[in-house]
Image (cartoon, rainbow, N blue to C red; front, side, top):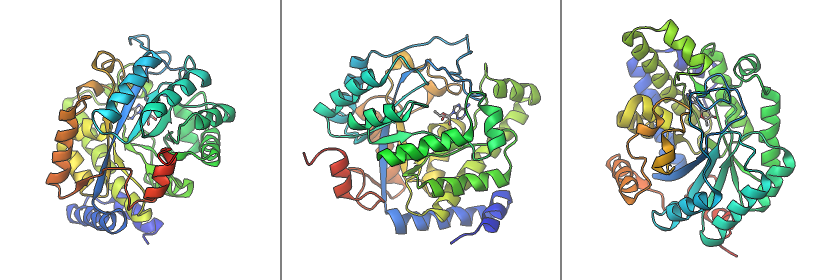
Length: 363
Ligand code: 5AD
C-alpha cells in the first residue's frame, strides 16, 4: 500500500509521465476492487437559504446579491419520485444550505413521503444539526449523509468557517456513523493556504473516517465570497486565472487517484465542480483515473440559477432532469468501456443484500 512519503511526492510532481502512470494505477485498482460499474446519483438542491458563513461559498448567509428560494416539500417529493420512477435513479441526495426552516418534522415528512412510493437510497446533505435530529431523520428513512469536512487542518478550517470548528465537524460525522448513516465526506481542493501536507492528511482522514463515498472537488473562486474576492484581486488577468484553474483541476485528479490507491474499495463520485472547471474531458480523465460515480443535478430549472454555491453552476451540460441527460451520461460511461450501475452496485463495499435492506425493499 502506498505510504505518506510517496503520496506527498506524487502530489508535488509535475512530471507528465509519472502523473499518467499514477492515473493508470488508480484505474487498475478501481477495476480490481470495485469493478466496471459506474453509478449515476441524483442531487436535488431544495433551498439556498443558509445560516452559515463559509468563506468560499456563494450561498453564505451574508451574500445579499442572491435571490433565495425554498422548494415546497411536496415539490421536492415530486421531483424525487419522478427521478426514481421515470429516470431510474436509485440513490438521491437531498441538499440545501443550512436552512432550519426545514426542521426534523418537515424533513421526516419528506423522507417518508418519498420512501412510501419509491425504492431508493436517500442521502441528506443539510449541514449541522444535532444528534436527535439526525436520529429522527434516520428513523424517517434517510440512510446516508453527505457532509464534507472541507479540510483536515484545524487552523485552515477555523479561518474558513467562523461559525464552527473542525472538531465539531468530525464529531458530527462520527455521530452520524454511530446512528447508522453511510457517510460521504472529503475536502475542497485548491483552497488558499492549503499545503500538500494538508491534502495528504485529507486523504488519510477520509480513510480513517471510513467514508462510504470520498467526495472531493476543486475550489472555484466565486464572487460575493471572501475567498473569491481575494482571488479575483490577486489574479486580475485571464491567464493567471486559467493557470490557477488548471492547477486545482490537476490536483483534484491526483487526489482522486491517490484516494483510490490508499482506500481501494471506496466509492469516488466525480464532482460537478470538476466538470465545471474541465468539462467532459476532466470527467473522462477522472473516470479513467479512479473515479466510479457521477452526481447529476435534478434541481428544477427555475431554481437552478440561484443555487450558486459556486459561480455558473447552473450552466453545466448533462444536468437536466430528463431521460436524455441520463442517456447522454450513460453513453459517456460506455464509451470509456464501463457499465452503468443498475443498483447501488454488487461489487462495492455495500453488497446487494445490504443495499436492499437499506432501501427497505425487503419489507
Ligand atoms: N468551490 C468549490 N466547492 C464549493 N463548495 C461550496 N463552495 C464551493 C466553491 N466555491 C462545496 C463545499 C460544500 C459543498 C456543498 O459545496 O464542499 O460542502
